[in-house]
Image (cartoon, rainbow, N blue to C red; front, top):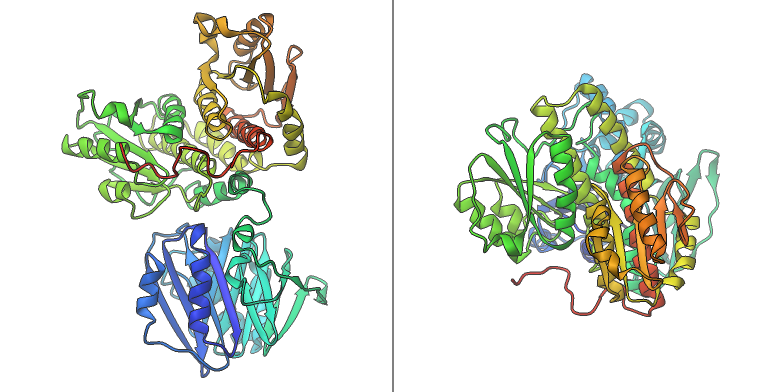
Length: 602
């Protein structure tokens, strides 16, 4: 997601910032910018798209000699990808960069606007710089103004601020979003992860939540709620790939753990107190639409399949789901009263892109759900909703599936809302469940350790059945796919009620059954299905909030208030199970054999 760099010292600041931002490209971004105070005057440059565009804009700018500088890569959350919304954000004489979410930004923005301050962007970040300048006029002391500013912020933030009022100082604060300080002699570096400063700094201090301070002339002062504090530097690793993994063994593991955080970014600005809002969609977007057809491949197909239950149940809209590689050749019957939705993590999936072109040629309105802005599928569609998952480096998709599923759930509720087919009470219930989802995605040490210990029992045998009902059937398909992709063990996802129509013939002690048993949906029915398998001596791993006496292994989930909250919690369990089995088998988790991250051929 968004990335931060900063530098205070005598070296060429532009190049340090651009090189640092380049090391953060793996996180994903849609715009970038830098700000430098050179000769007590602010200079700033922003550009949409890749860093090459920012390099081109800054090619005539140099910044040798002592100075301060900050830079940022942005992945759109509040507001669309535009230069005005790109960081750094400007006040009258100050600049700020920020990662995270200022939860009370709307309240702060209205307060500042009432005092005559004009906002240029749609972002939450801009409130920080205007709030700082407001307090600076009162205090006439930049650090006191910064302290007052961060005291007003609610939510998660890592932020750097520079101002002409203190042209030799970088102010910093951290709460909830990562940020570190690097040191090499009198040079001071800031970054949101290790990689931008590896090879530049020799020592590092990782900021804790609630810490803030300032860097000035090679000196760093650190504070928390109790006042000034000391800190201990530590040596900086020299391994950039390891640094990108943030201490995790694999990118896939890191991305599983990131799901709780990125889900908040997927929802921000879209899930409101009593409604769903998509600024990407015009108010009349669904006028004349009476059905939905979704086309996707692989993991994206599974998220689509789960959403088909939601569109019909919540949105009261007929929804059909097609595998893109099959859809292209079936001579489909298409009408202009159908909204054609394509889903792709990369936005370059060849079969899905060709299906989209067919739908457009047939005159259908089109919508894409994607993780990459300006990708082929996004450009080809009438409208696009970005999932905001950040770059996903593990080939086996995790957080892309989670964020796709959330966007589709929000969209189903949005359809019901604009079509007036659901009550306000239902909208409130669904929104409350959405807001609980990030907690359901948190991976506890206890859960991960339990799955690690269980995984040693599932390395041999003649296959796996993942079974579930309703929305948990597509989740069973996805769980089986994850295991296949990285462990190379045979696994199938099945509707639980279909086992007796043939597959149960395979049941014996060497058949492993992963049973998704939510308490909120058809629990007694799936319990009966699992009992049938147990009676045939299948080995059962039950995933449920309620203990199941016939299970050989049991993983207890915590949430049982809403099916989708259970869906996401069980999703994490299946992802971790696939990961731990693959690790025990000695496989390359991030780069499984025969697979590619972006499938750009038929």
